[in-house]
Amino acid sequence: MSERKGGLISNESFYKQCLTNPDVHIGSREVMNHTTHYYDKGDEKIKIGKILFCDILYNIFEEIITNAVDLAIKSRLNDWKGSKVTLIRVTVDDESIEIYNNGAGFQVDKGPYVKSITDGEFYYEPDAAFTIQHTSSNYEAKNTKDISFCGGKNGIGAKAAFVYSDLLMIKTQNNGVYYENTYALVDKNLVEPRVVRDECVIKKGQKGENFTSVKFYPSFDFMSKTTMNSIMSLIQRRVRETSMIIHDGSLKVILNGETHNTGFIDFTKKYITRPNIQVIYHEFVKI
Image: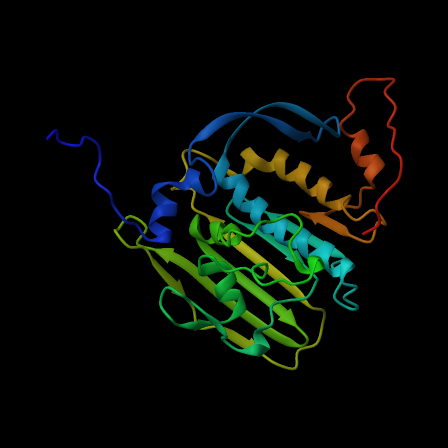
């Protein structure tokens, strides 16, 4: 009988598999030439061209801002009075990205009720959302208005920002209950990476608006020769896309202190780089 050729079957944990095969979940760790749309700040136009960047770096930003966009849409479809997202604020520096929205925060007042099928422990909503694989509010959503419109149901999305960062910090407030925690995935080069969570901070009876802030420090050592500057033209395009999603102008998006409140028609005009082209549309669908 001939001997089977090829590699042996192996089994890896979720975190280890994310690190050894990132392209399965989020894209390549290498810097590659992509043909894509980007924002040209000089001409104030959205153009298409070749941009050198690392998939992971841009896509972990995309996962977090998508969550904020989802919340902005759902808060209007469900008419969440007092918790509609009217502000998404993006802050980017050389080391970190922070995305803030002023919609309904995580329900930490329910206590650590999310049970992990991996270790059997119970976790607070933010801990589960960012550090426990295959957790999502979409799995048992009965109402179509409660399902994510921009994101998916694989339960990995936001976890990618945690896995591919050196540190992730979450701050959230909902109905006067404030929650804060910091997470890190350590021993990434070993057989089994470990999740480290700080002791959470919970404060009740807090004043001020509901909000969620996610700040993460991408693992540049894991990505090949990339910098935050390589994706700024893509972030600038995405911010402008985000600002025009709610057509009535009630969503303000801020990038590094600069406010964007672009209507749909003004946004489409940014794609027009040739003269004498007219924008034609029929009607808006109200959200």
